[in-house]
Length: 367
Image (cartoon, rainbow, N blue to C red; front, side, top):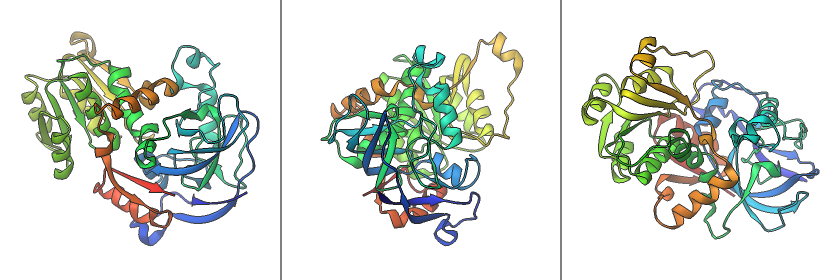
């Protein structure tokens, strides 16, 4: 079938993207699904910094590529057991084979065949269903239809609005998961979140959900700090010089848990410095592969500090996405507050300018 989608053929074009137009809306041939795969009509797809990182070249991927990985849709053809035509699904950006070592240990985010497929720009089976174009993280959600591995899909409540449902596949799963899965924050422990994009604010929602206190939010954008305060932050701090000391003061000497969601090594160092003795720093953002960070080595031992990475929120998507949706529906996880705007396919380049400028939290492409 012929699909219409946003294709990136060259990374690193200069902004503003509304002028350089790195994303080109093209018609492409999409082959039918093979065994274990689904054809899905995409209903909505979120614009994430991980997409922006491919566009600006800081997260290199094989080219050309049809972008979009945080999405939701309706199954229109199933070649996989457990899925039927009409099912509503959200996608996970790491397809989990269920058989490799990490999958057997319940660490779906570290699936080895899934990682290899994502690097190669293919589906989990190793094939491409897009003619001459690579898949983005097994999803390629910036198109009206997608073929995906059933291992990338999770059935969800069909009553959920698509512009909200899309957010659970990346922002919510990554941010909330970093709190409840990776760090396992306990009620009454202090936490700070550096960076208030979709993932950072999701981490803030997760920390508020589990009862972290005090809860500090750090960013450079005043409107995001105000939003964080309305979502449960007890303190807000303007990022920059002096931010670490302000966090330490707000948390009586340093936070028990610090979450870095910016994808910047310098911010990671600040997050580490903002924790107390025995504190845990969780890094969620994806920096350029050339970046490195340093910490006082002795503090890891003498102060029993911990640095942990969190990918996909250390989640098991089939378990966690339905749980987080249920919490949203119960009014305990106000994910809808993250939605900044909805856009059309032809508006994507301008929308990524907005994302790069930090003027939006989560914009969602609607079909």
